[in-house]
Each structure stands twice: as structure tokens, then as C-alpha cells.
Length: 119
Image 1 (tube, rainbow, N blue to C red):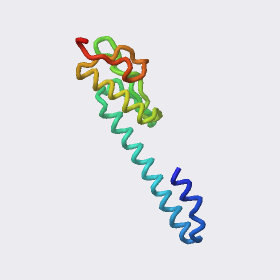
Image 2: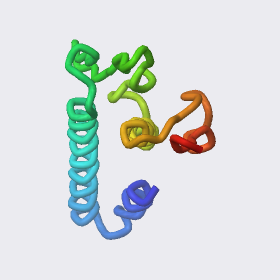
Image 3: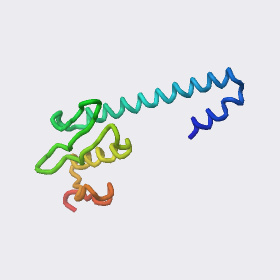
């Protein structure tokens, strides 16, 4: 990772420069974590399920995948722990379904089980 390499080579610039470099890198890491947390919270709150399906006690950010027409809208999602790419993929499937695309098996790979209505 680039940040690890920067911290490894920082001492070669002298003690004072290394301290400034390390502080700057730490600020970047804090900013990244904060941005990640805010993005996850925004996804959780605004992904389209009613508030009854959301669980947010003790800092948790989960959704049970509220039932629509007798089927879950999506798999249960943990917006705190699931990888962001996985969350975006699952929410993309929901958008496809809402636009008329049928996903036949939620356990298959994302696009392998997708077919359009009428095909």
C-alpha cells in the first residue's frame, strides 16, 4: 500500500520531515475512514427500504431486506461490515428489479442469473 511505503521511507528525509509526513499520512487515513463511514451511513439510510427494515442500535447499520410482493427486496445487508463493492452490487440488483429486470436467483453471481421480462 502506498501509505505504508511513504511511512517506511519518511525517516530518510530527516526527523522533522518524517514527523510532518507521518502526521499528514495519519490525517489522510482519518479522513478516509470518516468518508467511508459517512458513505456507508448514506447508503444505509437512502437505499430505498422503509425504516421498519433498518436496524441501527449501538452503531449498527443493517437492513433485513424488507418483503415486497412476498419476496425479500434484497439479501440482509450489513452496511457497517459488508464490503462497499458488495453493497453497491446488491443495491444495483434492486435497481434492476425495479426497472423491470428479473433476477431469478439471489444466490447466483450477480449478472449470471439476470434476464429481462418477456425473454
